[in-house]
Image 1 (cartoon, rainbow, N blue to C red):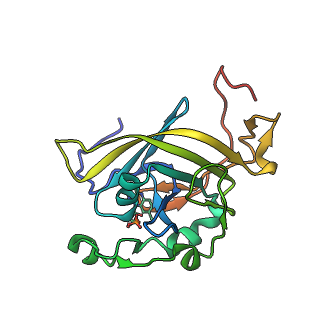
Image 2: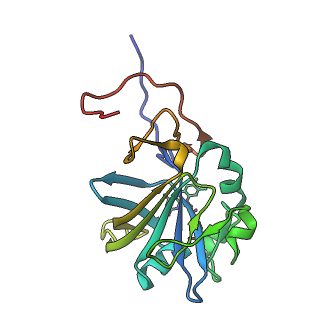
Length: 200
Ligand SMILES: Cc1cc2nc3c(=O)[nH]c(=O)nc-3n(C[C@H](O)[C@H](O)[C@H](O)COP(=O)(O)O)c2cc1C
């Protein structure tokens, strides 16, 4: 018989893709925020964003963003900016765990900006998937006003040539997200199967 215990984990990051959320600063430059709380359905991508950071401040002011998806080889670039915030005045609970202010996250991460097709925040060249999106709704749950649920609508989905299959499909054997698994970075393992609706 298998045995189970109830535990009280501090975090419940059970393994979702890492994304780099690009938002527009007041001065027209782009801020990069590592994130992992997201889901996608149809042309909608929903993000879970803490209220103590620069990303939500920027999105409240300017309702455009780019959702960049790094591959596993970029984990160190992500990690280089993981203790930085684009916010000048960092909330004390974040200061205590080591967050400091950094304006230029492109320089610190070693990543390269690429102009977007229609939105102001730039895309990240090294990320094989870059999604330009528009914020449609920001909801701060009354039962836990520490984060925002941000609903976005996809405008343009850019994919690197070598992961594209049959024009409008991503080849899942060529693409792996960088998985954030209980604060450790992972890549996908080998394919184990596919669903009846797969078209590739
Ligand atoms: C891999 C990774 C995933 C993260 N996921 C989230 C997330 O889903 N939501 C969030 O609010 N913060 C997340 N964080 C923390 C933010 O990156 C952090 O709050 C940072 O200050 C955001 O930058 P900003 O203040 O310039 O927006 C994550 C950090 C890392 C390294």
